[in-house]
Length: 112
Length: 117
Image (cartoon, rainbow over all chains, first blue to last red; front, side):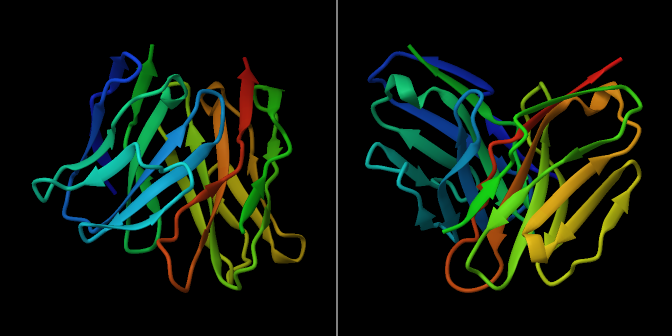
């Protein structure tokens, strides 16, 4: 099954700047997830989004993070004031009918 | 709370050898799903397999096979006749299968497999 696409593939930003990462579903799915993978570490759940609302969020997903689906198709993760420790690969995933999550190619974020 | 342990951080094998990647999990849920994902050097996460907790049959797909043992809370992954293209980081993951919540994945730390030609 097709996954989702993500833009940009790479993003470099200065500490304190806002970044928006985008996830574009190939077909009309309701359940989406954002995960983060700090370099060399495991993949960690950030937030799930169902039917245009946050379903669940982890402790990592604090006030500097937000998600929305502004135009009914693209699904965005916003980091308001980036910190050095936000440098990571960010993955969007969509859930299939059989509960399998298929991941996008990821956005590699580097905060300087 | 859920937890996935992949005790092997890195494994190196010579091409054509068989290799088994271990995965041990902890969960209080009576029903759950187990997954394996492959992360090649390019960085994407590629789905390999999903297994329901009530289905303990082993599965084989080409050179890949999976051994699920509920009694030992293990879901091990074997690659037979390894190839250089198998070099990647492999993640085991767990999610709930019933009840409230979004069934997010809990990942292990991954095992980096290097297949040497």
